[in-house]
Length: 261
Ligand code: FPP
Image 1 (cartoon, rainbow, N blue to C red):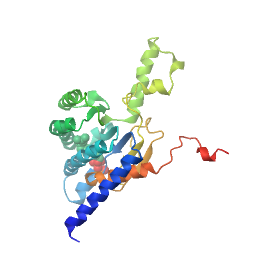
Image 2: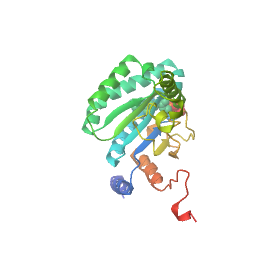
Image 3: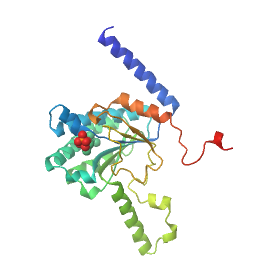
């Protein structure tokens, strides 16, 4: 069999897999820890930045796949608060990639009906990135499809501290009683206030940890780990994660109804 016909066959089966995923029910919110860019580059003897550059291609492909499959929200962990401690040239390169992505992809995001928002500490971002993010969020705000949520200068612990401070101010000002603070009230002050918790969290690169990502929100999220480095992560891996999710039984601490007696 020629390579061309093999490719065609695998394209066909990918399409069938995706049709099955859509019929079976897609997670409303998928979050991804995009990891392994540096190791992907090191394996090739290239600078780490080359891994981040190739990682942008995966970002593009997964946004497209998530939109096509009907995922409601896609949250991408692009830059953690801890990442500020990386060498300055790498930090600058990451924000340049983000800026270029926002400039180059805005029309494509618009064509694909994608909305955009960010979570994290906005004050920590470079002025240019903050401006480009603001413009893109505004321009895409009328869309009705996938919500692309990019985590930038994000830390789950800092998010919870931020929410506590906001609530403490309300209590100190007499606008809220301490007893009124429950899950819903605390959630209303998180950066993700308007976004449902993730149903599925994917981490690439073989690491199996959470790295300070969405600590509050992942209480009942299904986790899926893959050894694939982010720059190699594509549509077929995303579909594999969704298939795995569809096979899970989510019990939220309860028992299955067939096992109640
Ligand atoms: C983790 O890999 C990846 C990052 C810290 C950055 C992710 C950024 C991108 C994919 C590009 C820009 C994003 C957008 C949304 C346009 P690592 O560097 O920690 O890899 P390593 O663990 O192998 O060193």
